[in-house]
Length: 473
Image 1 (cartoon, rainbow, N blue to C red):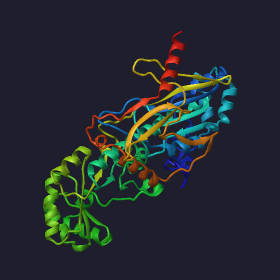
Image 2 (image 1 turned 180 degrees about the horizontal axis):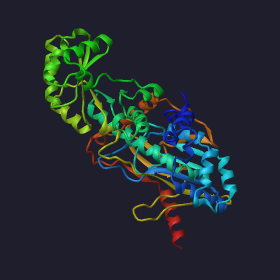
Image 3 (image 1 turned 135 degrees about the vertical axis):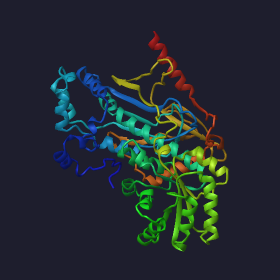
Image 4 (image 1 turned 90 degrees about the vertical axis):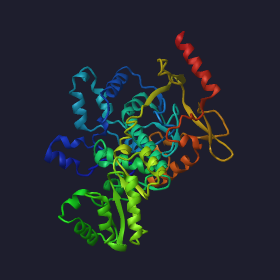
């Protein structure tokens, strides 16, 4: 498997374009990722090139503040960022398009020649995927020429913001399920098929046990899970006949959707399948009450081994309430609410310039904007643990500070070359699970108002104040 591969049809894209027109090129692939960006990234780098402003620069990606009802985030999306940085190239087709845009009419030919040979040659430090992070903590730090560091901003933000958001939401749903399996059912409600694949990956990182998305399952080795929809039952004149026929085709994996007409009647019909019945699914009505009645019907028929799955616009709050009321559910299929993070549908991660090297002198950079100020210089996140190995506090400090703590930002790329081993999504899921287990219990509450202690070091405060004073003068 190619690391970080996210294109849905990478091998057939050229033929598709020839046969059906340009609309198919909206599926991202190795040729067009160069222009999957905001126009102002390209106008800025053209300006930097024309004015000779290509100093070594450092940017950091972080989230200013945690979303409402979130006490932590799970970092995700780095594998796709690595793939992007290693494969981003400007092809002749897209260079021609850019040259013909009126906004670039006064830009020199040399700039486009530069883009023709463009490749990322900078350094990247990042928090490993699956790591719990908090507000203002750098998730990725990029050091490269100003042009290289600037042009990648949009893609990095898009990938990290989305997958971090969904992995964090999924972890909440998994926590609410209290040990019961959670399955990603969200592709049909994701914001496009590509988002569905990335959501499946992020949900798995957050603790889901499987996905309905076949492509994600194939590419990432996530268990594929799914059986029938209501249309299967409705295609038959007789409900029980539909159950029988499905069992004949899938005798070892018969999980029946029993609420197409009458849930209780459907449950009784399902018991006629006998010991080969693997499970039933409830998708509507008062699932808490129905699950209790269905459980009794199954048990009375000697089918104690049959599992009950619930689905239907579920989220962490509904799941928590259902279980608190004694719902007899063994697993949950969660879609819309999880893959769109419906209650908090966007993560406000930002990517900011923090330092430049000009004539071998390091120049700290920061914003002073009200409510949007930043901290200057290259930073590291230092995480302290208590005696029980639970997270105690974090300190955001300068990269050369020394604390008796774990450093979260680790080397990923040096001079454009990969210097770390890219973990599988299964390994990332284990990292996330371990991190969640180290969170203080109060931070796991669905409506937690507890804030984890994140401070900045004394030296970083001094650099910030010095930078501000020099700018004011």
